[in-house]
Length: 265
Length: 271
Image (cartoon, rainbow over all chains, first blue to last red; front, top):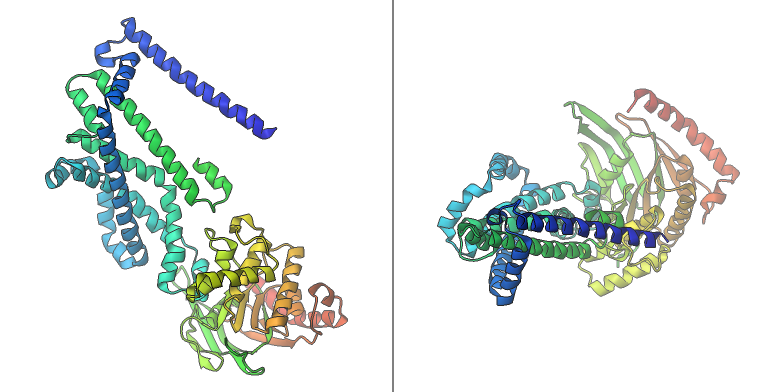
């Protein structure tokens, strides 16, 4: 009974969400047709949809999606790896964290966008500069979470493992790393999202490929329809990435009490 | 496999042990001072005392997790350096790894000893069965009750075949029924294995029901053993039935007379 009720409630919610979408799109379409909105600045949903369909039909959008995906994945992997390694080093060596504390704070507070010109100079207009840009965003999230995760490990849990005969390496592998992983996973949505932001913003600032480039090109030509079409593709892409992250998260956090999993979903 | 140590040898010996801690306001708190304690091999010793008297500190000294400021800790006649490799430690808190199943948690000590996985797994299954958890091998800790988690922790401790078992109020968080079941299981396993046990508790009834000897610790600061009471109740025991034995009540009264003074003193001194 209850699950049936929850089921109905969920579909009811979906229906309302869809209605909101339809209402907004229809209002936008009619406003631009009746001249309340200037199509030059606001385009209209039918043109945007037509453009999106054409992009996929001709296949020209795929290489942009591919490049953006590649940059996102690389930025996420490199940023996470660096974050885990440095986070561990800082958590296990209080001296290190004390010395570098002000540097970490400054680097993290710096608006990352100012680094884009430097990265373009260093790494060129290709994939690398976007990856570097994304890494500066992802690194800090993973770094702070790793640091926290390692520091928060219960002392009794560590002592228990030591009494059972764990070496320092065993402690890292069986206790500290999994504990940090819980924290890192809890910020997975944020860090993947930031990797994507890094890729798209980097492309927008200077590149020859990618979804950010697509939007930037359309904007340069005062092609509002193109800008909106780019946004639609990007939105779909983000949604797909988010679903992927959620499923990965569910697999890796299988051992968690269900309350937590629901929170995450 | 190690041969059981001959009975009568001294498994643990603390001599004139002192241990202090730095307090947050910069002072020094002496938790233990002048602690002399001997535990014979195969003996089950219960350590009772008022809260905050340093029972856990004493256990940590024997475990090698803490070092004494003064005095010495000897294990089977040798001075203890670093972690006590001949002991295992059942903590009061939940210390199972939440991301490992019951079976993986139990086999942890064997994994650390580089025992081949399959062999470790087999032994872990056998131990889970011995503590009454057959069929729960693949459950994660959060899917087990508090009593079941304690059983897993007990199996985790016993699988490494320690000569000395240190226990820090292991059943304090359990409800009365579960607790008595666990105590009986512990006695049954101890009867079979004859480990040396140092069992810390603030529950005098539990101490008497389980042990061969009850040691009373004074109130802190500078706590030390102030009395010893041999428990001459017949074994094997059932913790529920042994409480009805007239000798039990008699001993309880004698120990309580001493313990009550310390509890009141601890109460007056405050935490």
